[in-house]
Image 1 (tube, helix red, strand yellow):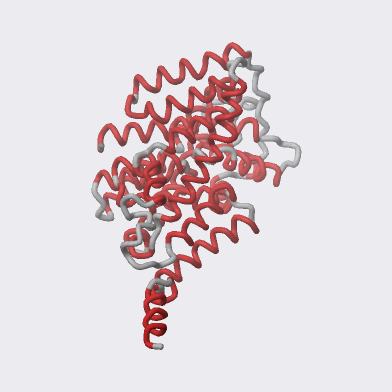
Image 2 (cartoon, helix red, strand yellow; image 1 turned 60 degrees about the vertical axis):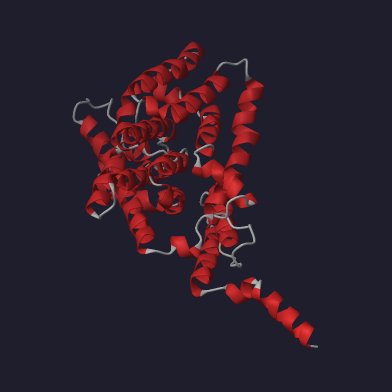
Length: 380
């Protein structure tokens, strides 16, 4: 009888029930909340569902030494996490993004590139704020990239500059990407007048296939020469786009924007979620990162909308830019562009801004990768 009792006691010591703490329970609830809003609100479900379930996986407590935790060398989760930690997954996601992105709107309206550049103010604004809050320059750079609204870029840069903050930065970046409609709409309304919201922009010119093929080649050469440290992201982005536009590599383009990006998204979501173990995530530092992430999104939106208004000072009637597309300067493709479209149609149901908003939106993708390269050059 004593042997049975001792065996049961030993078994209980290995269960999660015996080892669970309040912080573990809180993190599990956060994981459930991520899944809930992803399903009920349809907020970035392809990201939040894997991250949410990963948070649950990472916060089921267990005794040390079982070689199953994400931070235990040699465990399966630790091996999968190397793709995040070593920065392997982000370039593969950029390959898929390039293969599914249409740069036509940007090629036809190159002036809108400046809006995408202006929205990167969120990155450098958060960098300055993080420095004032006591973070090191490298940590501040990794935190600032959240303002680019680009999860893979945030993971890539934080894995190089501040790997100890990677989990909090990645979850913050993806969380705010999902909240783009909630965060940006009130800022857009606050910064624009009714007259500005009703501006109808000229239809973009038709872009020839030759231009679409030349763009990724020339675009990569120019950006890579300026910021060589951004080559892993920029190279894969433009290469993926060339696969799409060349017309002779359809199978490769389909693989890049389909099975490949889906597999990598699953792996990056689950492992990032698993990395948010209660003992390393529920800290004052994580709270600061989330606050700085929100600040960077606000500054990025203000920068994009504000710069569109400044540009209008130099354009005559009939050629003005609807400043509502300024929010799309962040990299959340195509959600930020959809916000431009939806807010614009609230005031004019026949005003279609999506095709125009896609220009600063894809420019923001390029801009965030360039900004990451700049920060890596100075702080790496």
